Structure formats: C-alpha cells, structure tokens
Image (cartoon, rainbow, N blue to C red; front, top):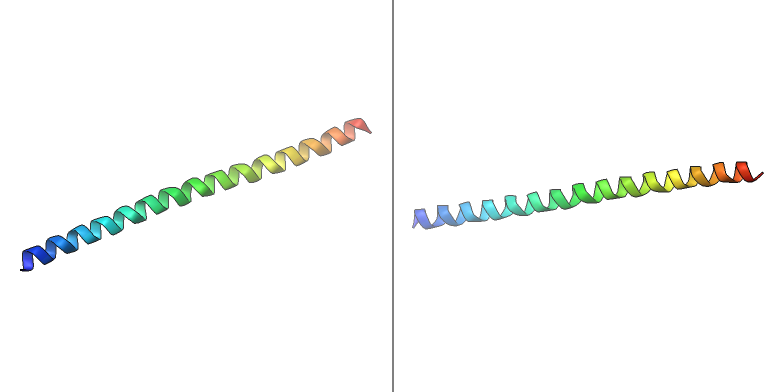
Length: 56
C-alpha cells in the first residue's frame, strides 16, 4: 500500500524533525547557560582582584 508507506514516512520525518528541534533548543539553552556561567565567573574573578587591590 503506497499511501500507507508514504504516511508512515511522513510520520517518521515529522518525528525526526521534532527530535532535532528539541535537541537544538536544549543545545541553545545549554550554550546560553554556559556562556552566562563563564561571564559570571570572569566577573567574580575581576571583582575579587579589585577587592584585593582595595585591601592592599
């Protein structure tokens, strides 16, 4: 049955694209979170250096 096969393929393609969309969203969120963590770490490090200079 060609119609059944084509509909099955359509469902397969749709589910694969949905999985890729979810993975892209997760990856994007992880990238944003990672960048924010790095920026926070750098900021806290520079703040510590400034505090040490003030203490001296």
